[in-house]
Image (cartoon, rainbow, N blue to C red):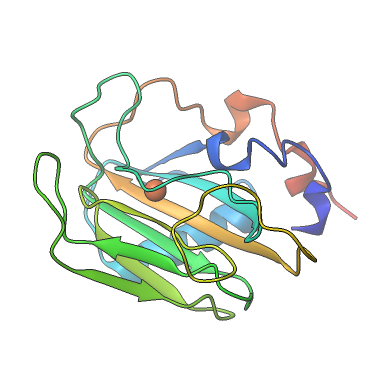
Length: 178
Ligand SMILES: [Fe+2]
């Protein structure tokens, strides 16, 4: 992750890549995506992945449904989050709300190194802030550790306008040879 430096830090949640089924991994992160895919045991057309980087005092995302941004009603089959590290707060929070239906339950997953969480791709979810609350405005005080995750969404059809890593031209340092 250090190789990414500050590249697209603010847009990290919106910098996503497509890895089709049976594609060869281009670098260690895609190898990790494939390993998680095997662990998840999901049969599908491909995986959309991104590296979520954020301070829990200043979260860039609100509660949301994962969906194809160009074909709004399409959701992934499953959404999943791999945690690289422990942070204060920053729980993944998943509700049982589906589009058009109110939430009646909320379950949270605390970020811990190497923890992996997977849930149906049409559920309302989000990230809680450093105080364990629904994120609002930036919190005062020290920003703490960076929360780093590898997010993998499994799709039965490629989402619109999501490039493969090679097509994107982004995060080139991921396969830099030392
Ligand atoms: Fe999401």
